[in-house]
Length: 487
Image (spheres, rainbow, N blue to C red):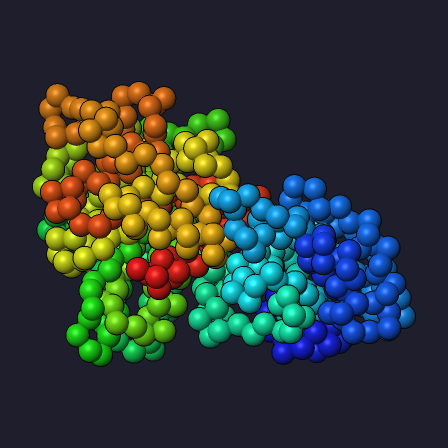
């Protein structure tokens, strides 16, 4: 479904089959819908607006439109207040009520939003865009390309808030990242994801792309990426996208994304159905790619590297094994005790390459890394770990502004490094006690490989919000763009 952003409410609603209005309950009580729509039939929505109960996460009322109105109208009442850790634009509440928006055969859908502040536009628009994903192989949706979604948002003065070019680019990149997560693994192997990356940045001034593939990973010292992906039919690779500004860069920032295009668990095979949806295990790489494309198009004073660590954790005659000892890019050795703890091996190589070879001043890694992250911060919020308080705070505030919520978890090397103790190598790749802060420990493993450099580092475990309700979300694109815009 194509998304358009009309300049007026009338333009958005004209010809729509389905109208979705969302506003805080207090605004609906003041008949905001009448002010927003400016039509005679808007008064007919008074009763459905009264009946919509916001609860904790919003509620909806549905009616058939009167003469001259869209055929079906949904009015969503959002909570008037949110807690301090939530997004003030009520992004999660919007996601909740949008679940009731089932377009069916509607060819034109109009969404009208009421914002408390104009700078809430992106956080409010993203849940709407996510509700209409790009990827589908349903045979009954052949005419979907002719369908359109119109989004218009009004500020507290009832004036239309117009999105910036950066906001529109972020919306597009989020939808594309979600599409990649939804793509079945037979169509998105490592070489395919590299092609997608090259396509996403084609024509952007100042961007170069290079890949280290297969056995060349060993030559480059990238033993972790190579080992995880060496049994797959398509070779593992490190794809590096670089944006260089025209003038001397202010600093160098590296974004490192876990790109496991499919995760069987390797020889530590995922069983009991938990292998299903592991096509989404490249959500970190998708987020990094999307954010890089937005930032590179916008230009800016920083040199930016996007490192896509790409592998399929497959089972085969040459699979890496428990008891193998890998030599990583950091030159540290890792004894394997769990082949399903593979993402951290990719990230460890990626952050080390970024810091040592690319001389990054700031390193940020993003990954669907641990199932424990869902226990730690839930499905809607990622885990953030950093060795710098200011970088951690920047991530949290960026999450509240964009709706890509994140929350700090422990950075405690002196307590967590011992979880990886090995008698024959510098460390193991998985913890000895799974009840001891697993998500923080996974982040600690990654940090072990750059701790000697003491660079500002941020780790985002997006296992919860990257894939929800059977769909990729493109989570992390907006968050990364906002973080880099405020550092």
